[in-house]
Length: 245
Image 1 (tube, rainbow, N blue to C red):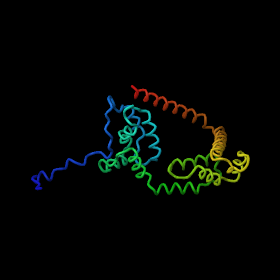
Image 2 (tube, rainbow, N blue to C red):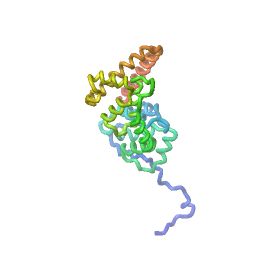
Image 3 (cartoon, one colour):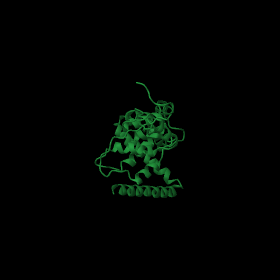
């Protein structure tokens, strides 16, 4: 079929290709709108590409869970809101994704994580977990918190709870291993995984309490922490209330 356009018309910029990468399913609910307080809260913790992408998703999921509509799936709300949570390099990444290439929330999470937590990072953190050891002069609770931090930074590490506990136990110095055995009434590894985890958490809290009691900064830090926590809780309650209206 002959193209009857003039050269000037052919040189004009195309009108196609400007659609967003994210495809939000049609929403037919009456009186549905994204309230500004919810958008503001999402934007209060923007991801720029430099932060932990898993922590960003945890925060985003927590925020979006405060908004419910009986006729709108929560995944649709997430698809609508997620672009508001990005800034800088991360926003540029999303804008460069092909039009209509993200059809579901799972698609978006997969692309986001693969962009900012590539397989090489997974390999790195898996190795860090496997080769974990308690540092010289590192307190038991400090080692436990550091180990949990590695697990949290790579939630798809694939290690079973048994593997995690075995790795941590064998990473400890002999004194802390003996303390765990004593708390277990024998060999720590003879306990069920859930029992072993409870023993570790209990021992960690005791050590943490003692170290905090000897820390002169504790009273000030605790006061500031409690104040901040109360403010955040109040802010969430206020936003939830406004969303329900």
